[in-house]
Length: 123
Image (cartoon, rainbow, N blue to C red; front, side):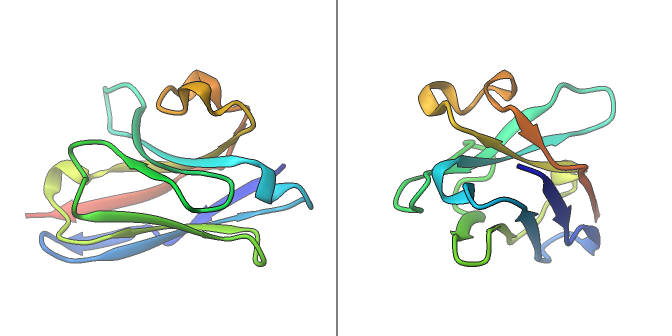
């Protein structure tokens, strides 16, 4: 599966952005989807994940209550709605797909990655 992330940009603290990740291929609905982020000089970290049918969602503690992950399998797209953004949310955000959801919080579990989209939150 090929992934294309979009929707990043520059926003003031307290603002909102919605990231999208469009997937190619007819097997999108069989993958867990995740969002990760990587700030300069830091390791890539888990942000959120969603089950293949969208019924289960998971979040990092740092974004819980502010971010929401969703998916539309008819459109082969996963979204990340980000509200009440903070300067520490500044990073390149990546979407990823995995058929192995046993450890979906770890980047190594994901076999497919999008190219990343920059999110910058100014104070």
